Image (cartoon, rainbow, N blue to C red):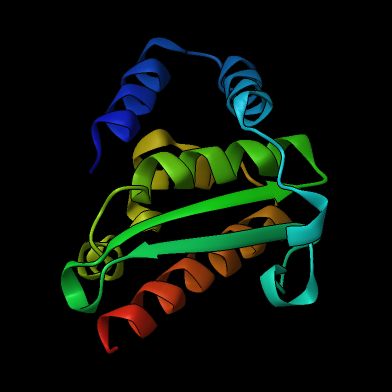
Length: 141
């Protein structure tokens, strides 16, 4: 886990009410820079999400030790927040570490797994699968 994700997890621990956690997720999304319109194309779109979601990977290096980062955006504020959490979880890891990270378990730790609608949960899984797929492709060259 990255330090940035640990900071988010610590903040979640201080928030007792789900509504406060929900607002925090939305705030995280608002803090993310928007994706350039030119990058909102079919090739970067994540399928399986109820809202519009785009993920643009950046891989620095080659093989399993290449560094993974991504930019992402959505037309839904809560989903932007979920992208911000994924960003905190994965950005800066090696592509091998990305493929080994259990993002759903991380979201369980935050308690988000219990409070997302079925559609949002499916969308979150689609985003994670996309990120894992991109990293896996980079690991295998």
